[in-house]
Amino acid sequence: MMESLGDLYTAGMHNVGLVPLSDVDAQRRCTKYLEDAVEKLEALIKSEEVELSNKKTEPGAVPDNTLNELKNTLTILTNTGGIVQPSKGRYTYKNYTYKASQKFWDYWDKIKKQVVEINEGVTRHSDDFNQKMAVADALEEGRTIY
Image (tube, rainbow, N blue to C red; front, side, top):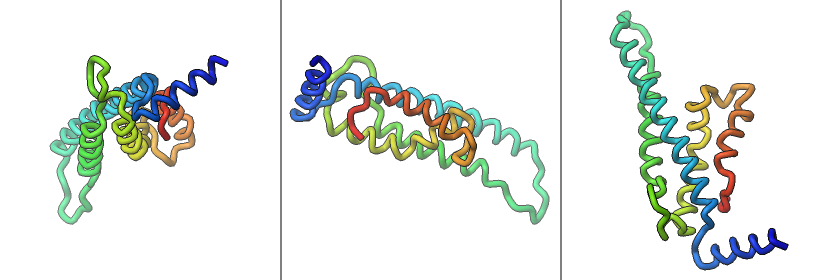
């Protein structure tokens, strides 16, 4: 009986354009995970820059694009993070709007695999990638919009 009341409450919130606190909390956990990935990526870029500065390039050698790829990924994650970041601190009406939540989850779904790759140190072709994706899936517990 209580479970059905909870479902009615959630459905009622959606009807007035709001999402439950569990959805907002899931957004905050995912945002923290994204921030961790950005920090790791920034450190990786710095170490790559140091490595490249110490390395002499041979004439006619194919340039290594690793640094540029890392910088592009960082740009994508920081820009997306800036777009979707939920309000910090107190919970406000803005945190609960269905529209803001839908926007967050749409963007999160686009970058989630990249964030997992960076945080968990795996690639999409790794044998344990799906196991590592479970970490991100656990962060989404309480998500109400798919």
